Image 1 (cartoon, rainbow, N blue to C red):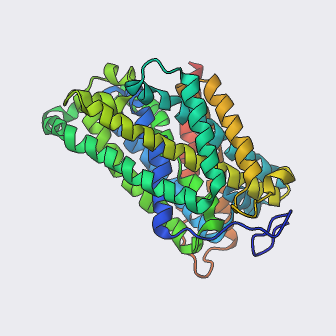
Image 2 (cartoon, rainbow, N blue to C red):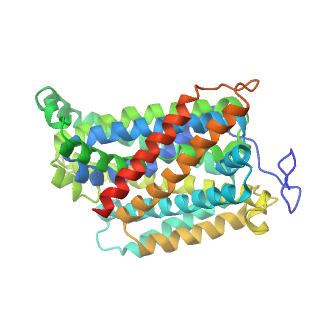
Image 3 (cartoon, rainbow, N blue to C red):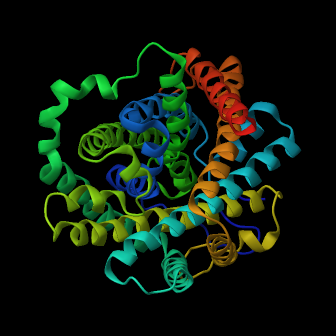
Length: 415
């Protein structure tokens, strides 16, 4: 078992505490932004039509309750493999904790494969004839290598790329922002009416849009590499989500007013297509930024997966091999290598939308468990010293809303 100095089972090499609040925020914004809007904006519009911005808003509300729960839990239990430790502390049933851990690993692997799959559409803006399998293989192997290199190097890469991808969103807002001038006349097309047809479309879009907000759960898995996780992790999660809600709503509204739902739904590079109407040179600019943004999401996910496997190994829920930390890089190399190879296989075999749906199903089940875990822990220890806590209604609503979304989508997929 690990010691208070975060030693591994195999040697005296531990994870390195080096991440500040600002780095955690960049880490969070980077993974959420890279995993979402650049890839799935068009797919959400394909489901919700002009009401896509409302789908993003609904998804944000659903994500925020669970994000707050994650924030409090990460302050109470600042450990790698966060979800495993939360459920273990709450219910003390090893098999349940182990299942949650493997579900987190599976969801992260599938979501990363989803994003890599969507990466090819932006590459084709520059090189139309390059085979998808070459693009996918190259990017996954390069990012796996960076993740092995070290957490400080990974965090620096993530910070630089996050600044670039935020600039990409701001470019879309600045160049295509004149679409917003028609909002006063066209807002009834965006706001759903009081009927089941509209809200069904909004919820179908929200289920996919929910994927664009996931990433806050990745942040808690670098808690052991944060300098002050008890204070910084909850704040970083809420700051990250707040930034992304604002950016997503603006971009989704600009997209809905600038392109038809059919155009967005069929687009492989939605942000490039939004800018194409403003000038022929713009699509390549945003496509270049999109390529960098998606890289960020993939890198963060690979780093997170390795930390979950590392933490599970320390609790004897995964093979000891996953707990080995390299003495030079201070990274769990075998966890990183194996997860990178599995991501590569999935990205080569499955398409974008099916992977996104699979990720959402897995993650929503996990989110239900995490909210229930916080509820259970709060009943035992309401106000731990030095920890900011939230009303118990937060995890209850988080669990109920997550369950409602899960049931809704399951019924729709059966019909």
